[in-house]
Image 1 (tube, helix red, strand yellow):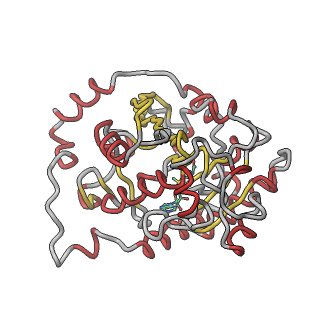
Image 2: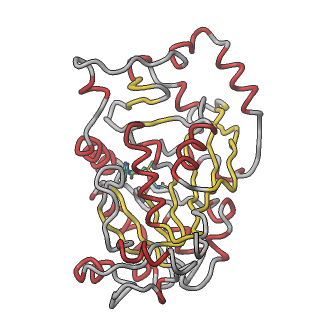
Length: 330
Ligand SMILES: C[S@@+](CC[C@H](N)C(=O)[O-])C[C@H]1O[C@@H](n2cnc3c(N)ncnc32)[C@H](O)[C@@H]1O
């Protein structure tokens, strides 16, 4: 974890073909345990394989407590080059960064677009504290005022109603591209989520959802619910920007057989989980929920391990999905 930033400099390059890597891995007898089908959990082993949302949040809390030093924080400087619409979007645009961690994604967005408001959630309170510190320490125009962190496990409890209430969801069907300043709900202060939460009034949905190395941490059996939640908080025409671990990434091949908890799903020794996506699994999840696919590809990049000089083959998935515009009368 954290290695994803090492290849940040060559964010757009394709150093090798994914299909060539796939053939190599699938013909290597020493890696066969990664390819085997995974049996359904039995009553004896399901406690280990299927963790509860509380256990998952605790594992992430411990992770963020352990990695609380400034050295661990790495700003994803490549982000706005990968997703240029975050820089070019309109003035009242809103972003929801899901699973914000210590703010690695939130920071370049706030820095790159001075008028964006960024809502950021994480299941870990500890992560939110680190994010607040890192955003506070960065010298960004109105950075703290435009950053709205809140605690939430989007795969279990869903997003709070103040992000988009049922009345706003209904108004999407009458009005396209509702901007927060003309949303139809009776909110008094769109910009302050605490006031919104207190008054039970909502911000009218967001223009962008960013899911950057977060979905892989959600157990497979809760992923569909998690994506449905992201779909419902987006305004019609809004974009979901996705980046995560790809199938046969070096981090996957490092897991031992006993760390497998599902097909392409693993648990680390600290209790955090990771899933490795192929293009079809991402497509099924997002398009099956109602999104339209705009971009979806593997990023295959060589990066050098600073400790031993070895070349590592990293595989990430880059995806861009759109919530369809609502057509009046449809
Ligand atoms: C690998 S970090 C990525 C952080 C950040 N998005 C970034 O770009 O660096 C994954 C984050 O997702 C959070 N997370 C994991 N499961 C979650 C869930 N179900 N709901 C909300 N946050 C979650 C973790 O606490 C962790 O901070």
